[in-house]
Amino acid sequence: MFRKNPNATAGQPPFYYNLQSAQFTNVELGGWASFLNRKVNIDWALYQMNGTNELLSIRQPDNSTDYQSAGRTLHRGIEYSLTYKPTDQWFFRFGGTNSIHRFIDFALSNQQADAVQNLANYDMPQAPRWVANTELTYKPRWAKGVRMAMEWQHIGPWYQNQINTVRYNDRGAFGAQSVSVLNLRSGYVYKSFELYANILNLTNELYANNATRGNAPTDRTTFTPAAPRTFVIGLQYNFNGN
Figure 1 (cartoon, one colour):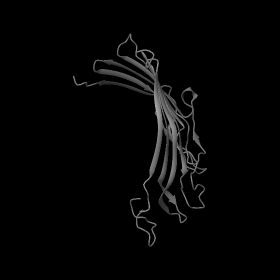
Figure 2: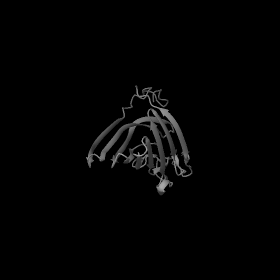
Figure 3: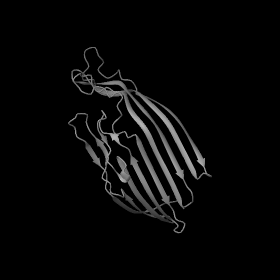
Figure 4: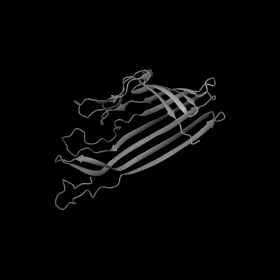
């Protein structure tokens, strides 16, 4: 869009002077609360963001493409977290978001022969409805400096293509759909030294970080495979300025 318009006709400006600034309006409402002498803490936020004048490259009837400021999108959801610390040995946290990311008016083509001309009312691809992360940490009194934690990461199913006909919803840890992975983390701190050992993807799940597909019935999915079970061991020194 920062080059000359190759489709400009006589009398039209040589550049895309007709483009407008994309605008996003966001409204958010949130809060927090603490219970049981601050052992339990929760916070949450509701939001809605509307996008207008988003830049589109639209196919024209003569098969050329032209930039237009015409796209509109909707982003709506809730974000939340909970922490619980019953003792100085145990700590639990959970966080997540439920959201919708949707095309409201998103033209792809003005060519009548194209099967897909506008993505209005379709959910965006690679936009899961639910993402969550939770962790349980144990720091035993009888072993000063030791910590152990089990983490669960989850990304819900998402549409692979723009017209919402195919979803990525393979099973992971606990039988949860899409991405469901366990990570085991441990460490030992002695003065300024820290020794840590982590096992990522503990149950060796076979899953994809991303899965995309075109809109044509003959298109096939392109997967971005995630790492298998991975062992990470390290030693670090923390400079504290003393």
